[in-house]
Figure 1 (cartoon, helix red, strand yellow):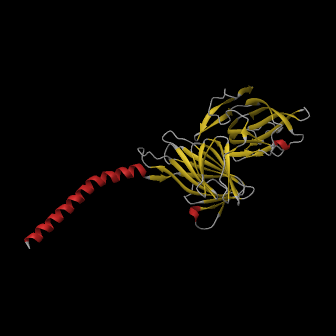
Figure 2 (cartoon, one colour):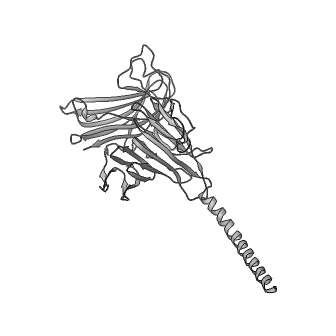
Figure 3 (tube, helix red, strand yellow):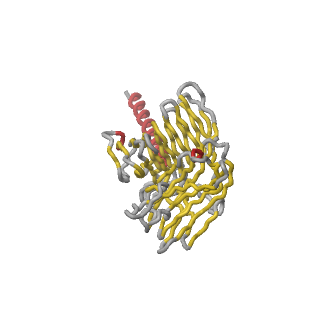
Length: 398
C-alpha cells in the first residue's frame, strides 16, 4: 500500500514537473510564434473606372452592381467586369500611413477573386505584405509595390498556373484553354498544374496550356521607352519643356512614382516631357501605347473651347511608310465639356482623382502604317491643371 502511494506521488511529481517545464518553455515560444506570424487584413479599395461592375462581397450572396468607389471589399470577394467596364483594386496597409502594397487593374470581361490580403500585425515579424488573387478569366495587370516597413509580394492563381510575384509589374490573360502570363518588370516564379516550374524576369512571358506541354520562357513585347515608370529622375530619358507657366516633376502617389503636371493660374499654359526615339518599327506587327493616368483637378471644362487644352495629352510623332510626317494624339480629361466647346475624337473622359489604365489600339494598323517612331511627348495644357501619369510604355512585338 505504501509503495503504491509512493509510486503515485512520484508520478504526480514527474507530471507536474513536465507540465511546469512545458509551460515555462512553451509559453514564450508560443508568444514569439504569435508575434512572428500573426497577421491582419489589409484595407482594400475598389474603384470603378468605366461602366458598371458586379461585386459579390465575401464570396456569398448576390452580385451587386457597383458604380461608386467602395472600401467594403472583404476577403473572398468576387469582382466581375463586362466588356465595357474597367476597375482598379488598391491594397493598403491599415493604419495612419496607409502604404500601398499592390494594385490590380481589371479590364473588360474579367472575373477576379480577392482570396486574401494580409499584412503582419507586429513590426518584428519577418513576413512580407502578401496579396493573393485568383483570376478565373479575362485580363488583369498586377503591380506589387515595396513599402518602407517591409517587402511585398503577391500570389496569383489562374486556371492553368500559380505565380509568386515580387515587386514589379505583371499581366495575366486567362482563356478557357490557356493562360498567358507576362512580366513587364520584376521577377516571378510560375508553376503549372502539373508541377512544372520556371522563373521569369523583366520582358519575359510564358503560355501555359491545358495538357502535358511544359511551359517555356518566351520574349515579351519590347518597351521602346526609357524610364516610363519614373523610378529615376526625369533627366533620364526625358526632356522637359514649359510654355508660359507650369511645372512637371516626379511625385510618389500611394507608393507609385509618377510624372506630376501642375499649374495654378489664369491664361493658357503648357508643360510637358518628350522622349526622342527615331526607332525603325517596320519589322514589328504590333505597337501599343500603355499608361496609367489620373486627373486630380482642372479649371477648364473638357479640353477647353478649341478641344486642345486637355489636362493630359499624349503625342506620338512618326514617319509613315511613304515618308510623310504624321502625329497621333490621345487626350484625357475629367470635367465634362461645355455645350459649345469642341472636343476631338481622340479625347477621352476619365473619372476624377482615380487612376485609369489606357491601352491604345495597334498603332501598326494606322493608315498609312508607321515606319519610324520619332518621339513621344506627354504634356498638360490649359489654365489650372493637376494631373499625373505613370507606367508609360510603348510595347512593340515582332
